[in-house]
Image 1 (cartoon, rainbow, N blue to C red):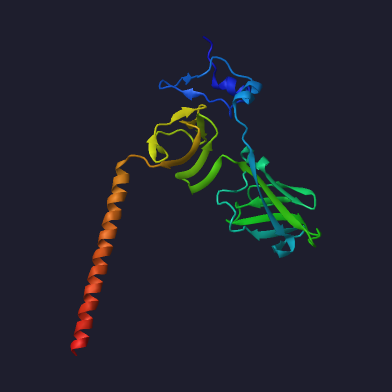
Image 2: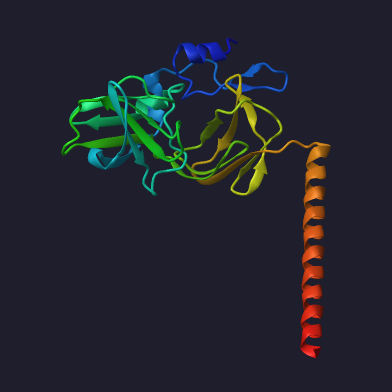
Length: 263
């Protein structure tokens, strides 16, 4: 029988709807004998609404850095700004960011600002929004409105480190969750506190089956090597040594106090 390949999925633009799962021998274990059409998928898939977050920044209150032809406005991000939000032009995420000033749309940038009417979030300095405008641009009574569209199924990100990602996810129906991390068996994945096995999907990434409902996901990279045990053992020794030093210090202080009281 004809098998669906990852190439077929990519060519049809269905990589966000159909998952190619690798089998143990490295070949695609295709769950479908033929690809569904986008219209067929719309009938079976539940509608996923997007969530729009909005913030406003008064241009007159920005810290300003004046250049020869431009002016750079620097804002501190509000305390309720999600820690994992940052402009990224190397993925499709940049399409979800928008800043407007008096009807003028600005373009997201990842890094230093060169062209006017561009902005960057958290790439130059942490917790900062930077906007570059023409030097003669009027700032009077104008605000920058930042809007970010995010997936409403991603309820919360409670751990965001290079080797540990933790988040709460609402699965709209039974299916696959694809994590766009390069596949490596040294990753450890837990769902609702229980360790689960993940598969290599879409050629390069990791995926796991999820039942409909809310789940707590944790993905952590911690290779099983002798170095790991050495680190744990060294940590125990450090704390043991620190405890001994503190104990001796307290004991010596007690002896000193007793001697002074006797005098």
